[in-house]
Image (tube, rainbow, N blue to C red; front, side, top):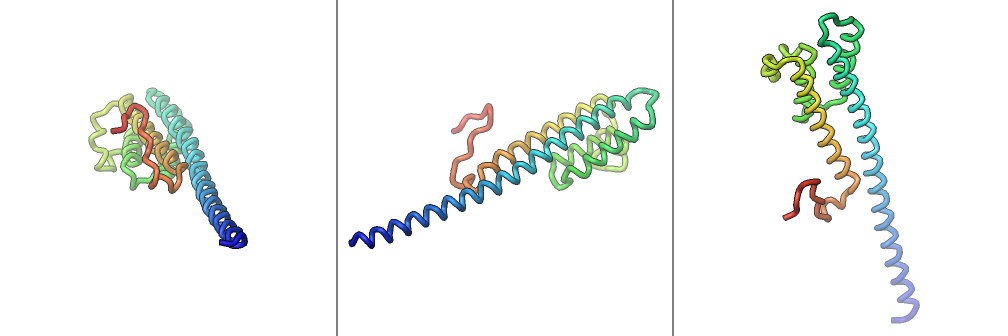
Length: 163
């Protein structure tokens, strides 16, 4: 091979490597953008659940002020807008939040909450919210790894051991 052919071959290889690196960078930046939106959603979700539960705790008093009920209803509606009723964990949280609001009787899937007292209902909402946050965190971690998830073996979760 002539030196000029080697130079042309080297140029082609470098151009290919640059294209691959550019594609990887583009994919990574897209994944990071999606992850940042999910993190923003997570913050809003956490704030909404916190405010909902804080007001729900105050609603247990015998003399509940109208503004407390109104605020709790507002946060309940925010939860409905933030959550996806097609996802099981989200639906569990929506049922539990409806029970806290006392409107679960309209939902046949939440009838089992009838026998649960107010404090337990609040605990159920908290547990369901934690499950949603945990699931969302797993999604964020997965998305930040991008398309390489197909190639690289997933890392074990905390407490898990790889086989």
